[in-house]
Image (cartoon, rainbow, N blue to C red; front, side, top):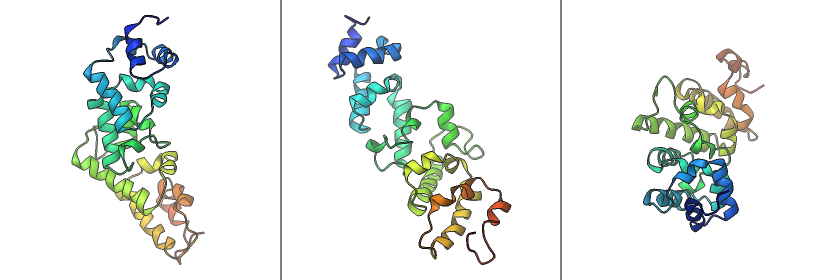
Length: 210
């Protein structure tokens, strides 16, 4: 089907196998309209492999990555996750549960990372970055949650930080300081989805968990 296709030859020249190239172009025909020896596309492959640490197999399994712009799509998202502390380094972006944020739609990305009242548009300004630095610091450093746990509990990314998540964790952390077996992941529902009344009902007057 793709025999003699110059774009396929260029992708093979970049290191992909013939089988991978055919599968990639079948899934993403738009790849056939690109010149893979151009500076822009060569930079894209460098970005994905050298900076994000993806292997050619990783890319071949997700060929749509090759259709995105580095400057306006892939780069800002990876930088956002790194700057805010979601990942320790750009080449750890393949962490389970987080990689999907790199190539999800703009609407999905906005829904996950934009607090509607404070950030009506997806703009990576200083306030936006600071907000997420504080959230990731609370979740990862103070609550000691793994990235996998956070990714599996989307409400942690959507619940208001100043109005609910932070004050509730402050209360729970006081209990954690005197209960050796306390684990934040056992109380994620209480932190995010319970009403104030139901959350209060979790505690006895003495401040102990039921």
